[in-house]
Length: 186
Length: 186
DNA sequence: AAACGAATGTTGAATTTTCAACAAATGTTT
DNA sequence: AAACATTTGTTGAAAATTCAACATTCGTTT
Image 1 (cartoon, rainbow over the protein chains, first blue to last red):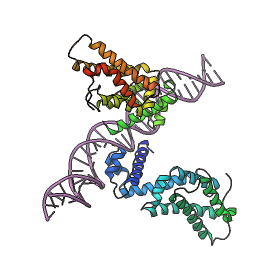
Image 2: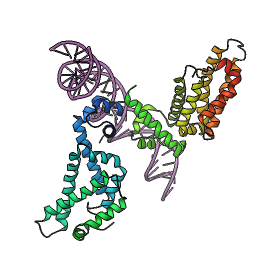
Image 3: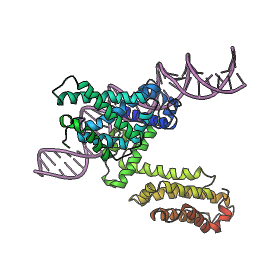
Image 4: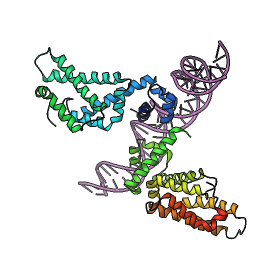
C-alpha cells in the first residue's frame, strides 16, 4: 500500500483515539480531526465516509492488530506463547484498548473480537478433537467467551495482575481442556 | 506553504538530527534518512540537493527558529524578556542545539548565528545611541561575541545554572551598557 | 419564523509524493 | 584487476493530498 495512505490513516486514527479520550464520540467533528492531524478535511472523506465509519474502521483495525500480534508469535492461537503475546500487547497499548473496550460502542469492539476469536477457536477445536462432533459448538463458545471475559476483566480493572500471572492463571483454568487442545511448545 | 512540504521537511530534518546524534554526519546516507523517515528516497532529493545541503538548511532552520522565538517575545532583541525566551527555548531543545553547536560543522552554526545576531545588535546600537558613531562597530561586536559566548558556555556545559540565574547574571554583566541599550519593559 | 454560524459532504484543478527503473559513482571483496 | 554490492542522483507516469469553492444540513440566536 502507498506510503501516503498508511501515514494519513495512522494520523487520522491516532488523533481520533485521542479525541475520543478527551471529548467523547458525539462531540468530535471531522474538522477537529483534520485540524489536529494537520490534514486537509477533504482527505478525511477520501478514506472514511463518516465519523461512524471511522469508528468502525478503527475498531476493525485494532482488533486485527491485536490478533496479528498473537498470530505472529505462534502457529495456533491457543498456544502458551500466544496468550503471553496478547497480554503483553494489551499492556503496551493499554489506554487504547481500555477506551475501545469500555466505550459506548462497547458492543462493536467486543462482538468483532468475539467473532474472530470464535472462528479461530472453532478451527483449533475441530482439528485437535477428533471425537464428539456434538459438543464442538458448546466448547468453542465456552472457551471464547471465557477467554474474552478474562481479557475484559484485566483491562477494565487496569491490569490488576502481571502478564505473567494472568497467563499462568489462565493456563490453570484451561488445564482440563489443555491436554487435548492447547499446545505447549514455547 | 503546502502542508505536505512542511511535513516532509520536518520529518527529514528530525530524522537527520537523530541520525547525526547516533552515527555522525559522514556515516549518514540518504537511504538511511528516507528509510527511517518513511519517505521515498526521491522525495529527499526534491527538497535537498545533498547531505551537505541538508546540513546547511538544517542549521539555517534552527538558527531562525531560535531567533524567531525571541523576536516574537519582545520588540527588540536586547529586551529582558527576549533573553529569557532564548534561554528557555534552548533549555527545551537542548539536545538539538548542543549537537549543532558542538558538532564538526561548529563553525557553520556559530557563524550563522553570529551574523544574524550581530545585524540585530547593530540596529539596536544604531538606534539607541545617537552619539559616537566611531565606537558603534566595536560595541556591536563586543556585545554580540559576549552574548554568543555565554550561550555556548551554557550549552556546552549542559546548562550549569538555571535560566533565571543565567538571565540575571547576563543582565548584571550588561549593566554598564544597559542604561542606553537594553530596554527593561517586561 | 428568520437569520446566523458551524459542520458536512462534494467537486475539479494544482501540487506533491510515490514508485519503479535507470545510469553512474563509490567502496568492498575475491 | 575484476566482480560485486551499495549509494547516488535522475526521470516520467501514476496516485494521493491539498486547496478553494460550493451547496446543504444542523443547532442556536435574535
